Amino acid sequence: MGKYTALDIASYLKFRGVDTNIRIQKLLYFLQAQFLINSNGKEPLFDDPIEAWPYGPVVRCVFNDYKKDKIIPRNVILAEDKEKIDFIINYLKKYSDMQLVNLTHMYTPWKKAWEKENEKPFPFFDNEEIKKESIYNYHIREGF
Image (cartoon, rainbow, N blue to C red; front, side, top):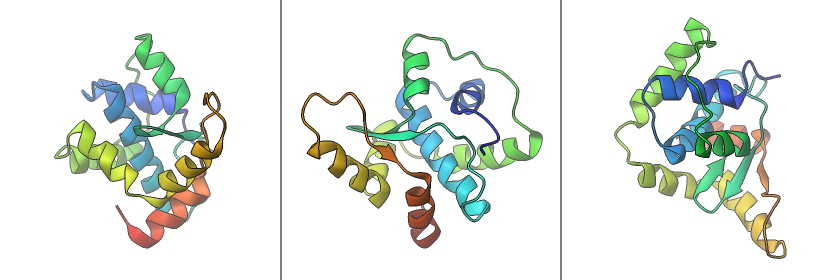
């Protein structure tokens, strides 16, 4: 069971100055991957599903709240987790939003889910989930 909701993490990211939906979405993916790696796949950071969208991994509830300007910065993250999250924020700040999109497009978890998504009849209303096991298995082997 995840420690937080994806909205909890998104609100912390917004508090830390992450200000675009694309960047929040990609950081959620990388943070989930890192927490899965740190726990040997047993403790995700959050349980909300990550879906394969055209611009890479997306957590739908965060996307919807962000576009409605409903993500309010809150302070619910434990200090030890803030350190881990801040490390990933700082590590990835050298990349632009579109570079993060391109990075996630290179990874097998998104590619496989997107292939399944493209097999569905148009229009797409139920995006394919990128499974936590897929994220963990890929990133434990390949890193970032």
